[in-house]
Length: 193
Image (cartoon, rainbow, N blue to C red; front, side):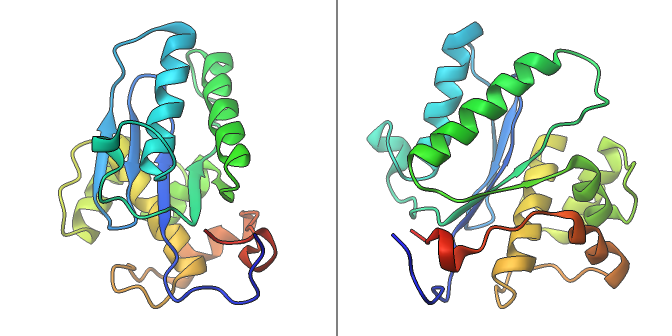
């Protein structure tokens, strides 16, 4: 569905995708980390269902009860210089992208260095700096670096799409300049749920 005017409130879900610990920042600003106990393709399936449930699309009724439909997902992109299993992380990113596309939910992908620069002023910030900056900015509990990343991606989405949101954190112009590299989705043509 295409709309000509954006709603006054954009419901943004931010995602820090990880096979071990995926974090979400909900439209309310509440963060959570999920750690599936499954392995292999079953883990990808479980994570896809967790994403869709948090978008208010499908899943366990208890999981989606009270959730608002998501208008947009902001997700951290791939870290091409990371050690570990880049192909399996790529599989998860692909699963998430496909699930969102199938359900007509627009997606904005933010490179990891951009998230770090926006959050701390440094594109090479470590996990401790990301957690500290999120805890300083956010009144709710940030329990781990995954939640800190998700919180800052939510903030990036708010900055671009919902500047009037009461939860938006103000950052300096040099930190905002990092967002010039992000490929934004035009919600007036992509549609908003």
